[in-house]
Amino acid sequence: MTEPTIACSLSDLADGKPKACQVSGHPVTIVKAGEKVYALDAICPHRGGPLAEGFVQDDCIYCPWHGWGFHLDSGVYVGSPGVGIKTHPTAILDGSVVVKMG
Image 1 (cartoon, one colour):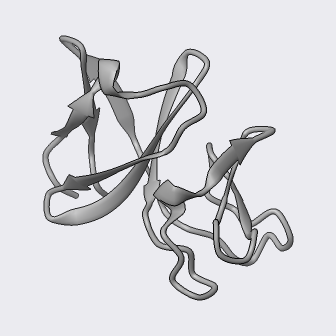
Image 2 (image 1 turned 120 degrees about the vertical axis):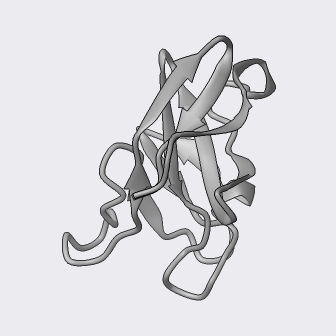
């Protein structure tokens, strides 16, 4: 696991709009949904679609290429519990989103 790293400013996030960021050299997608902020791997495992260009609906993020959906809190694919993407712990510190890659 890496040390917690600033991914972006909380003010850079619009509710329900994914944002592409780099954390410790790794691409991640950051999503603010209500009072929570999530960090997920940035690439859809289906065909490599950029999740930050997708959309958020019903606590899931959907790939813009083929519509694969992943639960924000767990990264589990909506269609099968055996498929998913990694999620990473987040915190808000002095107005910044901090992510710990794991």
